[in-house]
Image 1: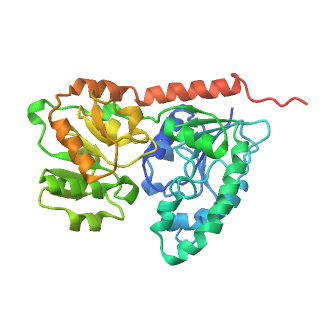
Image 2: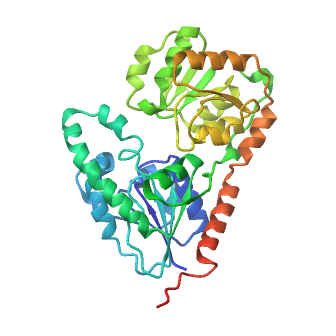
Image 3: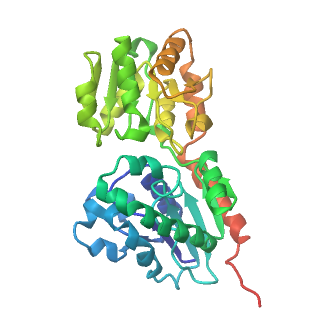
Amino acid sequence: MRVAIIHYWLVGMRGGEKVLEALCRMYPGADIFTHVYDPSAISDIIKKHRVYTTFIDRLPYAKRMYKRYLPLMPMALEQVNLNEYDLVISSESGPAKGIIPNSTALHVCYCHSPMRYIWNMYNSYYDSSGLMTRLMMPPLAHYLRTWDVATANRVDDFAANSLTVARRIKSYYRRDAEIIHPPVDTSAFHPVPRSEVGDHYLMVGELVSYKRPDLAVEAFNRMKAKLVVIGGGEMLERLQKMAGPTVTMMGPQPFRVLQEQYARCRALVFPGEEDFGIVPVEAMASGRPVIAFNRGGATETVVAGKTGIFFDTQTVDALIEAVEHLERMDLRPGDAVARAAEFRTEIFMRRFASFVNRSTGGQPKVVHG
């Protein structure tokens, strides 16, 4: 079979691109189609494949301002010629699934989430936008929602990266989805002896409002306890001003620093709601427990009372109570490592291959009539 993989944009290496890497390993001859491509920001595994871009890539400042061209992406996708491909895999978070495959091809969609900025997080994006953007968002979002729902019918089978996302697919598209958790390279993380574990807590991730890094900083300010924050983003400068003497804002860091901080922290603090959330799994692979908000993908990875604990409301008081509770617990690093191993890359690849085989019945789709 000739295989095409459609990925929304390739401008960095985050969770969606790690899924794409696994798909590249599964389908070494696949061609990749995307809206915008920055080779300097992409791994060698992906760069081994032929990468084709839509006309979005040729628009001014597209590699930095690609989201400004969101209204044009439906038209760009529908101009992609996929007539030669037997299997089409769309990797959906931004617009990707709206391509038009050959009528005899199988189209499966691995959905990281339906587009957040027009569905579940629309109000958050709207409230944080400037005046001109707020004026434009309602009609554009209405148009994109209509197109997004209509193009769900171009997908033969959906896979979702979590139960949380499967519920969104059911709510917005009225489609069922098989849950296949994304791959995590757990072999890259290792625990250290308990004597080498520090007395600081850790938060890792992009510093944006929905991840609630402000909650963690304020809680540790109040407790006068040590917190290390790794990550960049639009809130970095604001959080640096908020941070008290016990909070260390490290900004973006190389992978080796992240590995060391995971292994030596008292626990990971995860105060936001994520579609899946790879960071808690990486922390558990390092033998460390997780304190997480009790919603979203973390509820599917962290085992309460065994590999971490949850707090039920996104408030400073609730997070402080959770930290104090964890301090009274004695969780075994081995339990965290074993749980993380359930999300390793090989398991994703095996489950995704089975999903595709069930969708095809082992054969390319045949149309009778």
